[in-house]
Length: 117
Image (tube, rainbow, N blue to C red):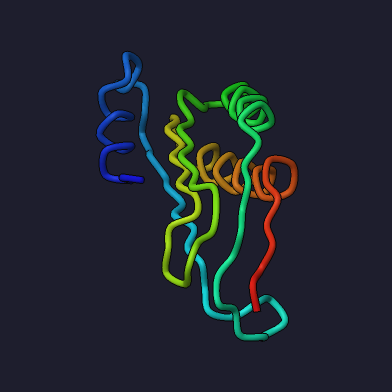
């Protein structure tokens, strides 16, 4: 997973001259659960078909030009990268909501995660 390369790819997009903003998300395995319990790692699986639909939907949002997603399946340890999402669009009022919605939908609809305690 290389978020710098994803941003470079975004800048090379055929419609990059219409982009006024590129926003990114890099999810990492943290050492505690949402409840505060210590976590050794996680096992995660991503559904490529669901993610493809989520990307398609995000690109249909107002002002969004491109959406790139990279994921890591399998057993991950604390500090490992889980998912990178990069969204390019015209203005921040369009790009930030698209990034937030895309990440939330991937977590809810496009992945299965089990924390290892």
